[in-house]
Amino acid sequence: QVQLAESGGGLVQAGGSLRLSCAASGRVVSPSGMAWYRRTPENEREWVAKIYPNGYTDYGVSVKDRFTISQDRARKTTYLQMNSLKTEDTGIYFCKFVVGGRDIWGQGTPVTVSS
Image (cartoon, rainbow, N blue to C red; front, side):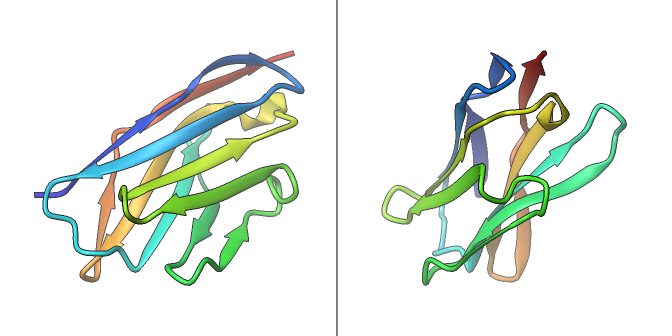
């Protein structure tokens, strides 16, 4: 059974940076995609970023040019570097792997950006 574990969340002032990690454990066949989502305080789910095995990346409009997604496929890990954080980036961040056509989600890590 594949499990994902996020880490790296916390409290940061606006303008600061955080780096989130998401590591897979268990029998993980190479994921066909990795992505980050967040749930806002208003309980809305937003897609943040995604990365494909070939390295192609894409970002949500609100985080483009501030966040960077990367992957270490040997370690079955994806990272989200978040710079120039804004209060509206506050939320719970989840990673998702697509493995064998199935979506596998982590438990989430909270990010709070204070003004």
